[in-house]
Length: 136
Image (cartoon, rainbow, N blue to C red; front, side, top):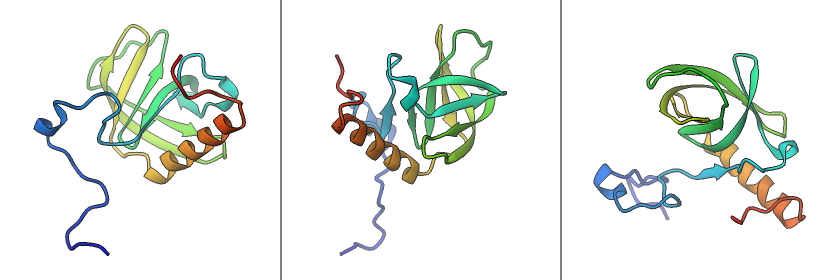
């Protein structure tokens, strides 16, 4: 039974997010550690160069980049090619830059169906003993 005016995803206000920890985000986030086997990673391409994804969600991505001169609010365009050969093109605004990582807030988000498929794929790989999703 569905209640009128109910939403599948609950939106949170800034005051509600103050007490949230890293794992209590508004959107599902998939993490790919730096030591994650490359053959199991989706391919991130920006300006014809490949970069290693660190995490993805419906509204953002974070990736490893040894050198790239970007300022907050710069816009990047690229594509993510998943292992099932599906490709998502994106554009996003730089919201955070550290020594070797860039975080983007996506202008057009990644559909949840891609995030869910990626979760299923990673859980299957873990069940087969190919990867470990637990932190060491």
